[in-house]
Length: 397
Image (cartoon, rainbow, N blue to C red; front, side, top):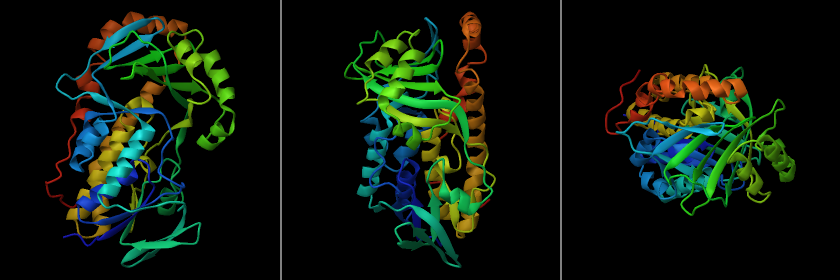
C-alpha cells in the first residue's frame, strides 16, 4: 500500500495537469505550482497527439474533451519540392489529433480543476528542503509548500532536474526556431490530411482547419540561438521578413508566410531535444514530461509521451509503498520507450533541410522508401499501439 498521500507538481503546462489529475485518481492529493501568472496559454503553436497519448488521456477522463478541440488526421503526405507523396499509415489505429497547444493547455487545466486539483501561480521554484517524511518547496515570492513528494513537470529548462542532479545535462539545440500561425488560406487538401514539406530552404508542415483556413508550422534554420523570451523580444515583423524570404520559393509555403501577420504569428523560439537524463529521481523528487524526456518535434510523440509518463507515475505511486521504489519502477517502465523514440526522431532532424540534389533523390527514391524504411508497422507500430492498463497492479522494480 502506498505511503504517498500528497504531491507538489512544479509546472502547469501539459505534463503537470495530467500528472496531478492522474495522482488524484490514484488517491493522492496533488497541487500544481506554476511560475507564470496564469494558465500556460499562448505558448507554442499546433501539435499532434498520437493514439497512445489520447488513450492515456482517456484513463483520466480527458480524452473526449481534447478530441472536441482537435482535428482528426487520418492521412499524412510528404511534399518534397513540388511533388507530394502519400505516406502509409496504420489502418487499425485511430487518427492523430491535431490541436492548438494553447487550447490543449486550457483544456487539460480545466479538466484538472474540475477533478479537484488546485493551481497556484507566480510560484517560481528556487530550492527544496527534504525531510525524512516529506519535502518543502521554496518559491521566489518567499512562500513555501510541503508534501510527501515533489514532481518536476517544469519543462525543458527544468529547475527540478538540476536540484536532483546539479550535473544533469541540459537540452540540445536542434539548430531550428519554431513558428506557427493560423491563416486564411484555401487549400486543395482533404480535411483529415497533414502535409510535411521539405522546402527549398527549410522544413514546414500544414493542415486544413475545419473552418476552411490552415494551420502551418515552420522550422526555421538558425545558427544563432534564441530562447522563447529572446525570440519574442524581437518585433514580429522581423521574423515575418525572414520567414517570407525563407519560404519564398515554396508552394504553398510562400502563401502561408505572406498571409501570416504580426497579430497571428506564434513564436516558439529554439527547438530542443533532450539527451538521456542519468537521474530521473532522488529521494522524494522525480521528473516527468519534457523535464526528463523531450524528443524533437519530428517524433510526433512529445506531448503523448509526457501524458503517458504522468499516468504511469501515478500508477507506481498508487501501488508501491516507498516513493523511491515507486520512482525506480516508473523509470524502468518509461526509459527505454522514451529514449528509443527520441533516437528515431533525432535521425529525422538530419534530413530537414535537404539541398536541390538531395530533394531529387528523395523524390526518386520515395516509392521504394514507402514500402521499406518508411513502413509504418516498423517505424510507428509499437509506438502508437502502446496502451497503459490502469487497473493492473504495478510490481516494484
